Length: 237
Image (tube, rainbow, N blue to C red; front, side):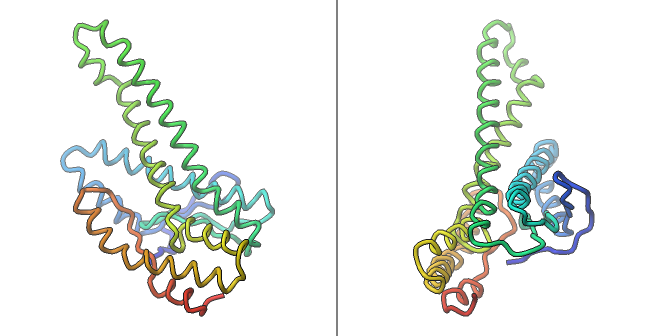
């Protein structure tokens, strides 16, 4: 898996955590703007909401680290997503909350954005009958906000599901390993996590090709086959 670690921009985020922007993020921005054709308003808003969702996801990891006394070195956003880098390693017990908070944040954002969007659409439909030209109402700023909230809900729902896929270094792979550590010895947990991840990593590339053919948007992320093979063989601790 490619992971950009060279920042081109940095700012101080919530909780005092440095947030860095990787150079590969420029490639993602160019790709999405290019696929938007002549109208760049929608892909531009998509990019803004996507990066905001990923940032809030990583801030969930950072918050869970800090409340357990685990210092956070930085958050990095790059073409393949983002990561939260801790200043020291965390125990398995600490990691359970740290890892889980990312998808939890996305699920909460999905629920809130979906509820707000549905409420706005219901309001628009309720008042449409009173207008002689209801099409104007559905082209109003209120309708545009409802559309953006729907998009924000979709992005966060996707990120929650995507991050729960049990491959490394996604949260799903980490949570699988942590769950197996509660049930099996460490070497067995590592072997099972690696084996499951290896199968999914091999299937990842054809799945990406199919997704691209269907017109789905993609994160520039491919799980590492050698990493999962090493885990399955017990070559990692």
